[in-house]
Image (cartoon, rainbow, N blue to C red):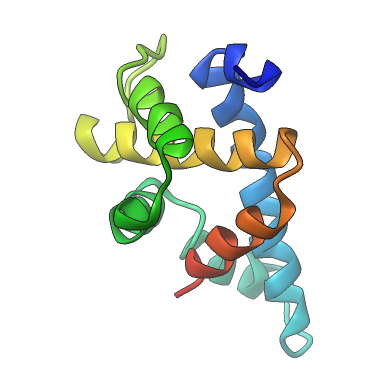
Length: 122
């Protein structure tokens, strides 16, 4: 077992949220110069539970067993708070997506991480 698989799924999601947000913001800045408000509005199209849940659904068939295990553990985790703007199922899928991103980042699987991050922008 990889040392990062021992982290709680919520710890992985905490890291994954930061990595995904930073990636999206970097991509937003690659576009033409814009206002802060427009940067934020563009980034939030990708950095929300619905978009992350949809990305997870789109990549599920391409995940390997290790990645599926991370997803399963994260979907079965019990966060201490409830989703504000999304139903519980969407929120669990988004948390699972973030956990996968966190795991790939921490285990330095850069090529696979970048592959999935790019898919999240479609």
